[in-house]
Length: 80
Image 1 (cartoon, rainbow, N blue to C red):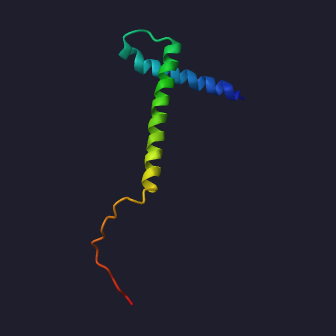
Image 2: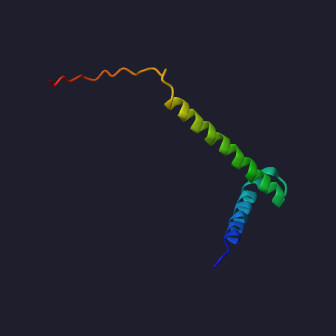
Image 3: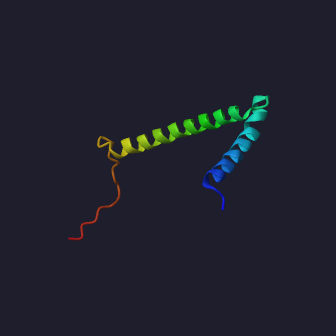
């Protein structure tokens, strides 16, 4: 049975390899493992901030009682 941390190390190794494969041609130089870790860290942080902003925006919209009411032009039924 694999140790949990060994599985995590294996996944990190795949992430590092994939990130290097993606970014090394774009930088025009050989990337070290530390370079790739920094790219992963920065990209993760960037998308975390975007997700946080999106959640905050949705929460603000849900709590905005001053939002304009959209008129309902549909026919009204009075069955009584």
